[in-house]
Image (cartoon, rainbow, N blue to C red; front, side, top):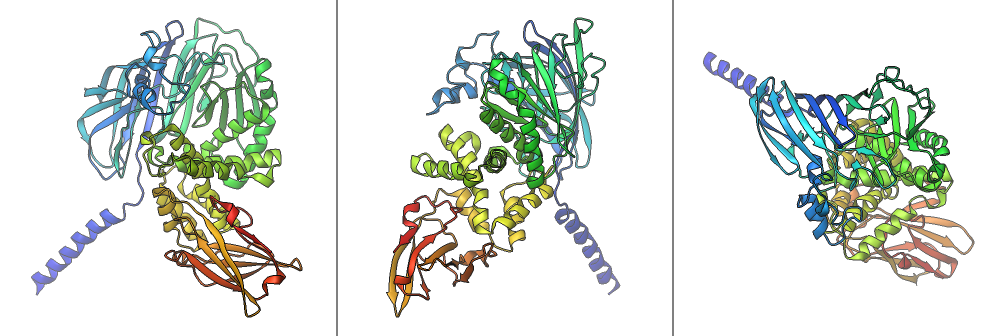
Length: 609
């Protein structure tokens, strides 16, 4: 008996400990610390770099290899990005076949001159834009290692996001410019070749020292550490200062970010605006007739940040920089590159959109290869809300997003949002889907669970998941918990299919001095029903048919009387309910009068007497 008892205790301890290890791991993510010194030659557009990368393995796995992204290698003839651009049905006009025509002095490249792990030289292989590295010593769970690299790079002619000499005359737009460690998460390594789409990387701290010709002004992620040393203080807005020596070293630090961008031009002027109880906003641009709108931008950007922080969550960094550069608008941690030759409304719109990426890409940072719609879509939704506030257009906040989504459904190009970003058949399917269908994924929550619950859930989602790489299930669970409703079906339909919503009023008939209304689900996607009945005397009632698989109903946020009807089962295409009034006393009956549901054919939504 003693043996058996001891054996049982041993088993309990063994499996108890194993269970604790396996099932109480919870959320984990990798962490990095970059230290880089860059010596930049503006004569040949090349630079030498040293990189010390401390990599923390917080995963439960032992790692025997690591991967880096070498983005500049995409800017070479016959690269994957070049080939994809020349063969896709609707190439981006900024790229087209331009890469295939670059000469040796115009292409981009990264060359790895040395790479070691804690002083031990490493074997590696370069496959296009991916550097494959075999570790000398396996990296066990809970340990860290230092990877030291010397590299040389050439900046390509401006084609897509990064490069030199953009269309507006900005010398250097330095995005995706350094060998960047790939992300490793519960699904393994994400070392996707770069074809010009999306990004995914671990959070960490950056110390970047950039040595460049003294005539250049640098704008970057992070906070400048030595403004006095280089003779350029942020308090000297736009003032040209004489600097000693041939070159200067700009020193930047950024904490808890997953990328680092910078831009450089000798003609940048610099302006600052401060958000109340928020960050300093920095603006870098070339002064001229085509950038007159930039003079008004700081005040409107402050107004935008105040609205964003109130409605979507606090911005946790001390700085945000709006930098003229790039080829449109592209977000990075603590900064954005935008083209600057715009009217005021366009300039504000792109600034707000890219700034909001700090929330949905910079801080939530989903794996954009799989969930681009959670970044681009949610950013597009929040942009519409914010710009409507700035320009007082509350009457049509999400109208453009709904209209564009309906266009996508009718285009014949739509693909499921679950498609990998790089593998959409057309650029239009990717763009319209991730931006606009993604925006509607969130906008429709106002219909499904109510506006108040949506606003609360959106903030909770941000605070719960910032700095944590959430996926689609993480997002939907926050909204389920806040509303008390089951919403997995919504994600299944909206993410994994191209089924559309189309409901109509099929019949209105009188029976025994009452009115029977028959609704019909014309589309494949089920939804709960808000039906507004307006009577001849002007009074109104809402008849609400919950969707059975939601397991409940939203709150009534109107001042109108609401009649809760029996659940509508998703298997049934027809649904009848009775209005306790004769048909002649009813003026109109309308499905979703507020237009919060993405019904692709609204002409059958209303019956009028």
